[in-house]
Length: 254
Image 1 (cartoon, rainbow, N blue to C red):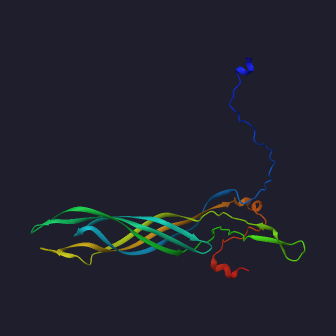
Image 2: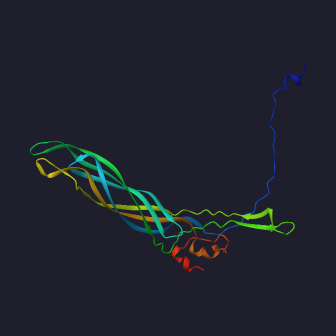
Image 3: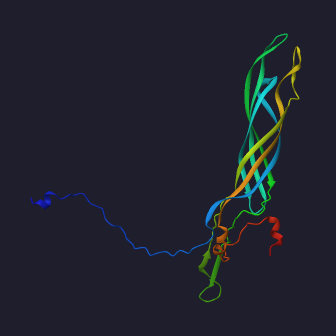
């Protein structure tokens, strides 16, 4: 047996170059839109939301000791090209209250309990954008070009030129700067505690809250320095179909 047969591997080998190609360069064209892309404050405002709710405690109580309140937003949505913003959220209230376990002729014994509730709210508000408006470009409608058939008697069903342009916009988003809650808790259905004329037990009460939210509307926009405005100007194009105007101005546009 020679050396070639002695060291030959009978396992089939599939290693190979399946395909290879040399790519041609793709052209790119500069687009001068600005030097920085930063969050721009579009509007800052304080919104007042009034809320009324009926709260049920886990157990009957004769006195509310303390209520901790926090505001949480679940939605803040600007609708282009209007000046309306829709806001949703809830007031988180942790309620500490005293419960009655026993009474004597001169005292009430019990314990401190707590209940946590989420009071939902929703509202919309009209925003004054002032100098800076949201920059939102809608998609250009799709276009189709048709041709005559060979006999020039109608359109050629087998041939058409089409265009479809999709534009992606930076979303307008919110920041909650601060919040304030002023409330009143009203018990209208209490039951007197025997022997204590000014004490009542209740499990439900009405909560009236006035909520103030300081909001900022922002959008990432491409901006340029003041001395660079001239060289960043670009000629109008088919994509310059912006929703950066209020719907009330639509009647003034030709």
